[in-house]
Image 1: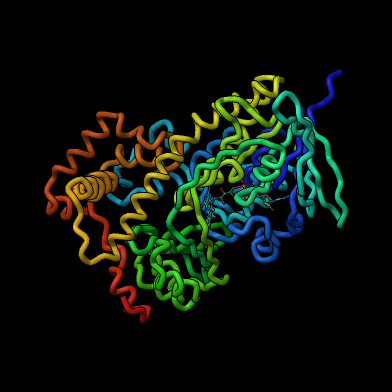
Image 2: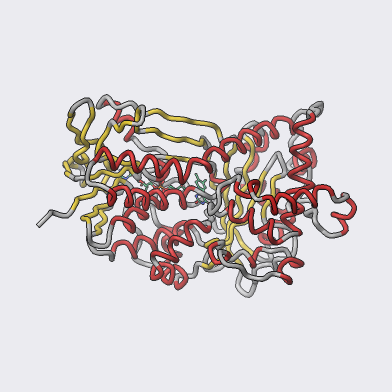
Length: 493
Ligand SMILES: Cc1cc2nc3c(=O)[nH]c(=O)nc-3n(C[C@H](O)[C@H](O)[C@H](O)COP(=O)(O)OP(=O)(O)OC[C@H]3O[C@@H](n4cnc5c(N)ncnc54)[C@H](O)[C@@H]3O)c2cc1C
C-alpha cells in the first residue's frame, strides 16, 4: 500500500487554512504549524479581543471577503458556510448593494448568487475556518511552533526540500515531509532560506502608495445599522479614501487610507479623536459611527509598508526548489484596499491541490502550479499595480495647486466619472459586470470586451451632465476637500 503523502504547511493564516481545507480530508497527512498560540476556546468575541496574533499584524484591520471566496466556500464546503452563518457572519448579495431605483427593478439572473460579500471580522472567519479544518481527517494543527529554516538536499542543480526546522518549547526539532508549503505571510523568511541554498528568488515589487488605519465600533444596545439609502459607505476623495466594513455580531469598522505623501494627515489620523473627527466629516462614515448609534471598541490600528509583490520561484520556466510551494501573501501580496488577498490565498491553496493531484513528478507539479497561478491571479495583480500607480500620481496632483491635467488624463477622468460610475449607478447590467470584476469572478478588463456593456457605458457618458444629475447618477459629495479637512484638523495646508 502507498504511504500517504506528508504535507507540512508553515502558517495557519487564511492561506494556510485554505490549504488545510484543500489538502485535508483524508488523502494526505497535513500538519499546519504556526508561531502564534491557538485560538481561545470561547466565542468570536473572545477571539476578537484576546487572541494574540503577532504573526498576522493585519488581523485586526478591516477585512471584506469577496465573492471568489464565498462562492468557493459555498460550493465546496457548505457545512463551513453554515457554521460561519451560525457564528453571526452575514452574506450580502448583489441586490442588497444596489441603489434604491435599481433595487426596485432588479431581476435575478444566473451567476448573481456568486456576487456575495461575507460580513465578518477577520478573527471570526479564522476562528470558524480553523475549527472546521481541525475536524477534517488527516489534518492537525501545531501552535506555538515557529519555523526557523528548511531541510534541503542538493540534486542535479536543484534542491529537494525535505522538511522544516521548527522551534517548539525552546528546542529546535526537524520535521520531515514530502511537500512543504510556505503560507507564512507577508514577512516570510523562506525566500532568504532558499537563497542560502543557492536558489534565485526573483521579486517584483510596486508600491501601494497608501497607509491603512482601522478602528472598530459596535452598535449600542437598541440601535440598528443605518438604512442603505444614504451616502455610500466608501469613497475615494484623492487625499483620503474611506470604507465602512460591516462585520458580524453588531460590529463594524471604518478604515481610512491616506496616500504616503500626505505626511501631515498620516500623523494626525492615528489619534483616535482625529480619526473620529475625520469620519464624522464623511457622511458615509458618520451615519454609522455617530456616537448615539455606535461606540468605539478598539484603538486606531495603523499599517504601512504596503507593497504589491510577486515572487517567482521558477527560473526560465524551470523549478529550482522541488516539493516546495508558496501560497497566500508569501507568494503574492496586493493592496488591501481591493480586498482580494484572502480570496487569492484560498484560491491558490486549491490550485496547489490541483497541481499535486495532476502528477507525482515534482518538476511537473511546480510547473503546473506556476502556470495555474499566473492564469488565475496575474491579470488582477497587473490591474492593481496599474491602478495604484495612477492613485499615487493623483495624490501628488492633489497637493499641487498649479497642476493642469493633460488631454489624456482629462479624458480618462471624464470616462470614469461621467461614464463608468454613473452607468454603474443607473444600469443594472453595467453594475453586474463591474461587480463580477470586483468579486474576482471576471478578469479586470472583461467588461470592456463586451460590446453591449461598453455601449451602455458610452451612452451614459454621452448624456448631458444635467440629465445625469436629475436622474441621480452622480453620487452625493463624499466629504470635504483637502483644504477643508486640514482646517478641520487644525493642520496648515
Ligand atoms: C491592512 C490590511 C487589510 C487587509 N484587508 C483585506 C480584506 O479586506 N480582504 C482580503 O481578502 N484581504 C485583505 N488583506 C490581505 C489579507 O490580510 C492577506 O492577503 C491574507 O491574510 C494572507 O493570508 P496568509 O495566510 O498568506 O498570511 P497571514 O494571514 O498573514 O498568515 C500568516 C501566518 O503565518 C504565521 N507565521 C509567520 N511566520 C511564521 C513562522 N516562521 N513559523 C510559523 N508560523 C509563521 C503567522 O503567525 C500567521 O498566522 C488585508 C491586508 C492588510 C495588510
